[in-house]
Image (cartoon, rainbow, N blue to C red):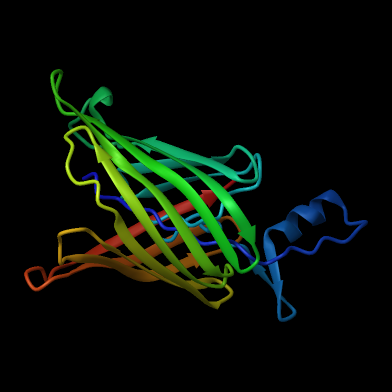
Amino acid sequence: MMRCVLIFALCSGAVPVLAQQPAAAADTAGDCVARAGADRPRDPGRTRLFLAATARTLPRGEGYVGDYFVFFPVVGYGVTDRVLLSGGASLLPGLSVDRQLVYLAPKLALVERPTFGLAVGALYMRLLWSELVEAWGGVGYVVATFGGEDAALTLGAGWPFASGGGTRDPWALAGVEWRVSRDVKLLAEGWSFPGSSAVPVVVGVRLLDARTAVDLGVVRVLSADLRSVVPWVDFSWRW
């Protein structure tokens, strides 16, 4: 459960704003990226791929709400232009409020350039199994992304930690994103764990407009022993 790795990519795409634009028009322009003479909405889910985060943060004061598989909601907020704080708690049926999975994921962008980004962060999770047993763990990570918001390659590594100890060898991950049209982006990401030949991979599409992103995909573990495919669905709404 604690095996989550985050990856990152830097947002590119400058937003042109006319010097004497009205405020409302400036807000509208801020939701779009001008390219090849056509306005494209910015990706509302640009701070992540599927599960993996990108190196992109949110402007100060901007936020989003999202959900994974119905039972795992998340909220994110741009504390500054370079600091993003996100987290949430599960809504698993049959568990009391104090025994739900709690997760927190701060992220700091170290480098923000049009075609390169570097970020560090962490994912912390806690689960209260019983009154006597509490499990916690997570991963600290660093990632580098090459490319812009429409097409990027992300490489990263994470160092796990957990209440029960275990290996601290780094995990590796890679992800790609490619915008094929105004409202559709292709996504793929995969992880490699030390001492394991199994490689979890998620591939799919993101359907987006100026404020909403819906991800549809499949999860496949590349291993000789595992051949099943699991559907993936999540969404986010920017505010």
